[in-house]
View (cartoon, one colour):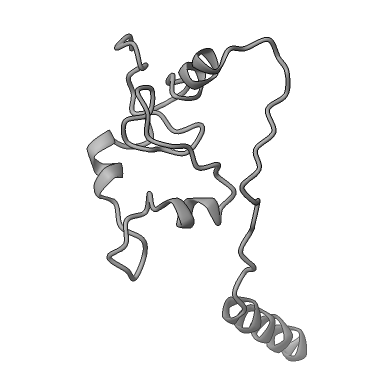
Length: 109
């Protein structure tokens, strides 16, 4: 029994010490032909579709753990698999695809 506990303890130490590999998705984005215009797709990307996780201004100020870099940094969020998207009329904060600020781009909640 002690051997099993020791193995579990060592495994937890080793797994904690190992860094997870960063994901790399490249710069080429391929959109499937689903009959959407670019403006419609951008509108859909930033329309709220679920529950609010935290207030918008909190997310804008949130920092990464053990760092003063912002959590919403494109490289950091991309390492978790989120797709970066440029600042535009539909996305004034430069959020990745799927993030919304609680208001649809046209102002309708």
